[in-house]
Length: 539
Image 1: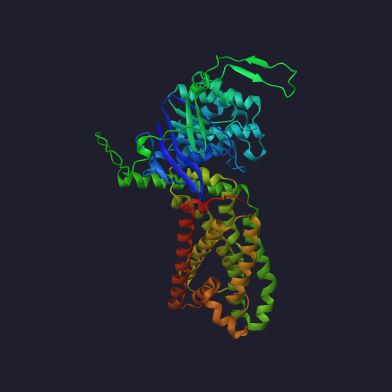
Image 2: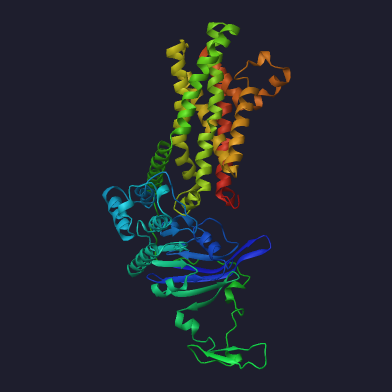
């Protein structure tokens, strides 16, 4: 089910993997053990597609995992070492997300979730938010997200780290049951008694290689059968403590540091995948498109649920601009008259607070990265573009709703005139796309919530002020008017004024500029997420 041969991964001059070989058959449990830094976690990251290897080859089932990674990940269930769960939603909702991405629907999905909950003793807490569960319960939920959908390959990276005896017992029983049902299991741990209970094949990793593989009996057969203790005081007798095997002569003892690489790992001939004689069925474009649309619907529903479970940021961005425009409108009326003053107050408030609402999209992305859930989703068949779109559409709806609320409130309360509503909606849609792209890019680039908050607060006010949103450019210094076109806020304000005045040509030019900015930011964010840049290596 899993075959890895000669995997090499370098970080600078350090080789995390240096000819890593591992094979796992269906129904087999392989316990991957080794000291910290032996390469276990790097191997897990390569299997799940988080990082690419520098050399080597790997197959998952019938798929070349390095060339057809998304197809290979359809067969994979992974429980990372770090907890990667959504704390604001329930256990059942976490499982519903992973089950939906695995292709389960309706009653079949619900039955599978119920089975996994019972298997890991989680039925009693299934409808509680994950954030209020104990550490052991969260560990079981983490394992449940890997097992839902019954994938043929399970990758469990220290699933019982810090777990209580009840959690450990439930997890080991579930892993045994999956292996008996035919699943291949890679189980990394530092607790050797667990591997004995699982009757696992042991694979010992050291310095980026698997230096020994076999059962416990096979690996301990050649250990010395006698332990000699010599005291510093010559008067003390030498102690000889027997162990479970007879002592071997020094020449016969295996050296763990001796490793002979397979011939193909040192060959200069580039490896080419062998074509199977069996003709494979190609997936039709319609089926791939349908599956992509299904995954997007699952993601959008889940992300909308996340926003509704924590509505505070959205509500504040909805209510504060209404208060702001009510208090400042009299100042604009006194300076510019009723019609122009109302229009300037509405446009300025809308642009300023929509820029401040960048935090909605940025926080949504950075929260995923900080919580490791982004990495967890990358271990599924999802494409990075699907992840971004699934996260973006609910946020886009919230940003557009904020702007429509401001316009609707101003129209009903202050009598704002909107002679060309379709033109105005076109500008609002373009501006929402720009906000979404900017927020997503900042969420991908930022490394902490503090850094992101500073970028939103300072950047939002700067872009709106320089763009002439709050104060007309005609009353600002000349240099501000010269640099204003560099601000997206300038084009938003210009497009909104043009739409309210019925100037279709100017509004179209503003929309084109805004959409260009949105496309550029979205492309940069997607490229950034393709590699390790989308992850937080260190905070």
